[in-house]
Length: 135
Image (cartoon, rainbow, N blue to C red; front, side, top):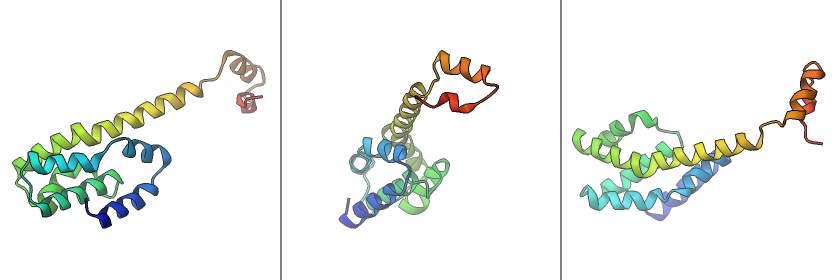
């Protein structure tokens, strides 16, 4: 990845919520795109465009549902190639990022489940939410 793109991706990722930043940073997506260059016989310019499309998709500037279309338009690959690249990108980049976010959300939910005495105090108080504040 060229230095300018690397810096721009760091800046854009830093604008995201912490949970999404952590999930994206947990996956070495730049290396995966470099693997894709060899696997799908991409030129250096196509690789650069692939990395840009992938980064813009990760930071939600491009819609994930249209990733394959972006590959066709911006990278310049055929529909068949775009489909193969999309499947690979989902298995190696987008699904791991989503799984990491899901895992983080589940951990946060587990830590926020009220214990039984907070629930009883809430009911007895007639709905006073201050009962859920840790004392």
